[in-house]
Image (cartoon, rainbow, N blue to C red):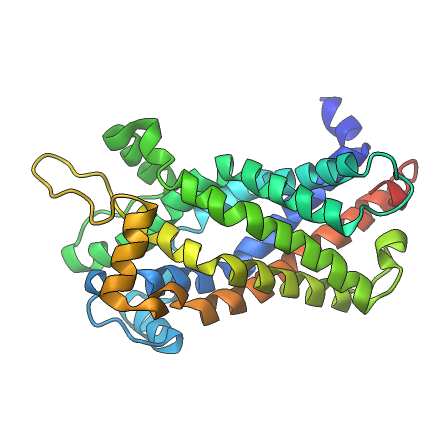
Length: 315
C-alpha cells in the first residue's frame, strides 16, 4: 500500500498519472468521430447504402441505431487508455531526456523531441494494436448485428473470440502497419506540439506557464499534423483489421497484406480512397489532442503544485 503515494510523489509517477488523465479525456471527447472515421474508411460493399458524407452517415447511424451506437466499442480503448497514454507520455519523457542527456537544465531540443516521438510511437503499438483491432471489430460488428440479429459482444468477449479463432497472432493482426503509421506520426506529433506551444507562448517550454488556450490549440494542431502525415496508412490498417480469419469453408480474406490492400483499394476506388474520412479524422484529432494535452498539462501542474519537493523544471 505504500507504493502508490511514493510513486505519485516521484517525477515519473506524476507524468504517468497525468498521461492517464489526458488519455481518458481524449477517448471520451473523440470516440463518436472515431466511429464515423472507421465506417467511412470501409469499402462501399461492406456498408449498404452508406451516405457519402460524414454528416449523412451521422444522421443515418443515429436514426437507425440510436446515439449510443456512436460510443459502441469505447470500453476497449477507455479500459486500456489510462495505461497506454500514461506509458506514451512517460516513455516520451524518458527518451527525450536520454537524447539530450548532456543538457538536462534546458528543454529537450526539437531533434530530440522528434526522435523520442518516433521511439514512443513504435513502442506503444505493442499495446495499441490489439486494442484498436477489438475496437474496429466492435464498431463494424454493430452493422451485422442490426441486419442479422446477432448477439452483441463487449470488448472482452470480442477479444476472447479472436483469441479462440486465431490465437495470439490474430489479436496482433495489423501490428506491422500500426508501427509504420505510429512511429513517424508520433515524431511529427510531439515535435509539432512543442514547436507550436513555444511559438504561441515564447519561453513556456522552460517556464511551463502557457495558457489553457495555448495547450488546446497546440495540442489540436499536433493531432491534425500527425494524422495528415499518416492517413493513407490508417486507411490500410483499418481495412486489414476489419477482416477476420476464414473459418471452415469461408473464402480467404480480401486483402493479403499491406501492399495488396493498398493496390486493390486504389484499383477499385481510386486514389481518393486513401483520404476518405480525412475531414472527420482531422476534426476528431483537433478536439481529442487538444483535450489530451490540456488534461495532461493541467493534471501535471496540479500534482506538482500539491507536492512541492518536485519542481516543474524536472517535468
